Image 1 (spheres, one colour):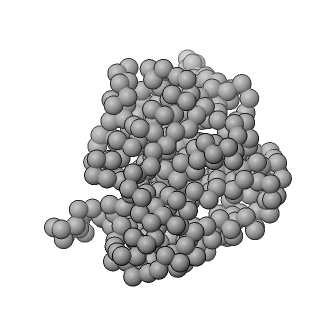
Image 2 (cartoon, helix red, strand yellow):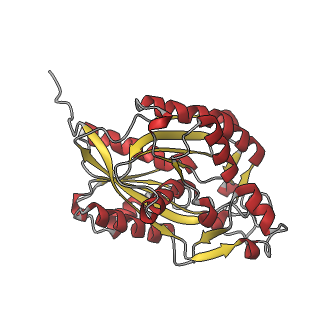
Image 3 (tube, helix red, strand yellow):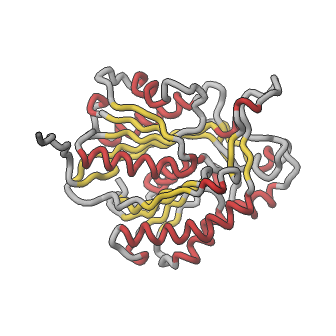
Length: 331
């Protein structure tokens, strides 16, 4: 007996991207009325000038659906052609069903796309792109909606002046579909569970204060900085090599928007040409974890700083510690 293998498109690509940002703009002056810091110190240490926080009405589901609808519209697809949904989030606090299932329902996809969540923190979008590419190429799905969405402001410990100003809320979505040419390079990804406590969200079982609505984020910033500026830089170079190109052939660099100083350090080690466009979306968005890369990609395309068809290195890294990155052709 010989089983029939699944077959799909020879290649896959990102067809479109869409985003939604929390509507409340919190600048550094306002932030410093909440924590003991100064606007200048925050900007110097991170590059952040302001961040976006969601209102109570802007739930992860609301923002995910808003970003998804933009991506679907830009791809020129009828929503019924979406047959896969992957949501990367740590902000959906219902253990089951997944946020992806709710997104499918809100989009009116009664045909029942495969829908599931992943938990890969700030690297989640790049994980989702790789999984979606594999689904399309294997024939398991044809058009996959990848969403990164977070409402991290609800998990910020406002008594921790080292992290409270970092995090933000938003959603970014991309459609991955068939392509006649290679447009998503091999993923370079991995994890280091020995550093699992470096960035973590409090266990629900440890939340004993009745006034505390959500588990809180904690982070050893110095350890994360060293890891990102050394090990992750090496992995970024591996992703470029795996795609069969050189750093000089890149047009755009979109790292996870964690800290401008991390981005600067990566640039020095990568030795990218001066003409490579580098995302600095963190200035006006803060760190939105799984949403940061698609939101940054959308911003560059909307501003005209980047253009469809250009090659971009994307790489995410965060709690786990986990990372994932690949070279993609921009939609």
